[in-house]
Image (spheres, rainbow, N blue to C red):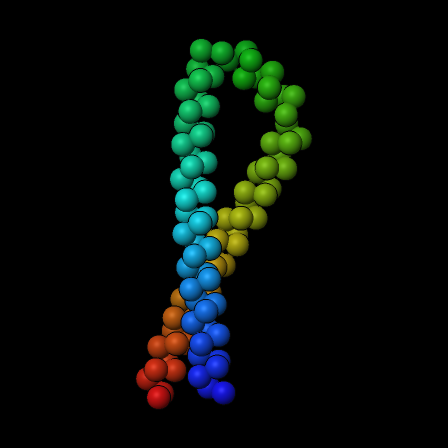
Amino acid sequence: MKNFLRNKMKDRLSYCKDWKNSVDLYIANKQITKKADKEYYKSKPILKLVLDIYFLPYNLLRLFRYLRMVHEYKKNQVEIKVLSKELGDYEDFK
């Protein structure tokens, strides 16, 4: 039974690490896109203003989704630390 629990904790830890890596990639690509948009709209400030006003509700929704993702990312980092500690304590107990 203890091995079953330890294996499930290892699986969960590997899932959390994979999810963290996926989010890191997503954030890096999002930053690249943001830089490209900024560069593109340097020469078109009026178009940028019109589009920002037109898409304000959608952009607010995207902001809230991004803030939620950042919250889940931080929570996942804590979960990785806790699972690593628990697995380390389990190995020491054994």
